[in-house]
Image 1: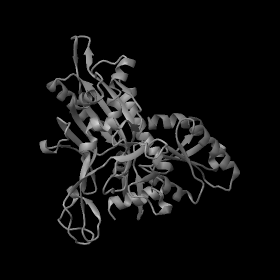
Image 2: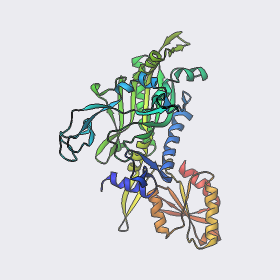
Image 3: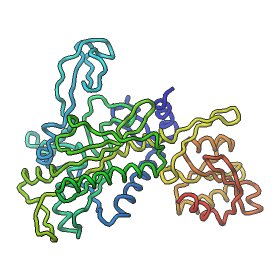
Image 4: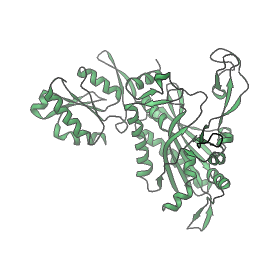
Length: 433
């Protein structure tokens, strides 16, 4: 079983990721996040926001609408160039992306393909109540444009000065031809992005571009990604998007393949220039120091929340031999772990143990996410929390009633120590910070 199969199995078994609409046979390219998955995603987004917005004085946040004027997508080029090459098997009629095929015959039946056609990825929707008079528009194919159409609003309502950035986290939608790889390629997904506006100076903007490349790589490493699992891949000149002056991907080694996780792009002034042209609004920035007006260049960092969650699961997945048995453990960084601590009563049928354990769990929940488990034997509970990525387990036993202390077990080392109940908050605060 390869890493993709192992993570798919673990994700459903432990409540990270479920197939979308599963009881109705599923809907390809859609996924639901379970109790652990929703916490993992929330933690990733919180860490992104903390690093990119909270801790910086030159970045503000935005949450733009999912449905925007169709003119937005005309201006951005999505209606004319946001497409993939589609081929169809003449025999079984299965459809594939031509750029992802390794041969010239259908992998499902061996049939011949049609000539490639460009297939637009935008998801259509309609607004209005009267049939025949509804406005055709689109679910956003990326969250980027919501920032650029608000460029003037951000400038006029805040005191930002170039260089400054606008960060956003939100849903996007694409009519993918061949969704797959668990959540790697989905029809509904979340992005976490920064649009950073700078003076239109190529040399200086490329320096900023390099700084953001380094910043984003270090962010993933700081949250536990292994150095050997990440690399930069530069887009070749003939592979650059129509708007890009330079582009790099941060890729993750997923099993035996390198997969894109985040892109860092130099967008030039494409977005603000196009929206100025199509809207008729003046999108220039007035530089108080030089008394110049100009359209800024844009450095973008664009990462997938779902892809990050998937790759953090893969990165943390470990199988190790413990006393002749295989232990599966998710060594997630404590900042990302869905539950920071699990609390157990040693025996579920002893009311005093249960009551004390519930009190401890209640106090800890004021500061962190806490799991509760009173099922089965203590060994099985430890194994379940190992697979969930929980860094610490607290067991309340009979000595706890007498001495006011508990057993704390470390996920990674499996070492146990006695800790006073009164000191638990401080104990975990020190280790989880």
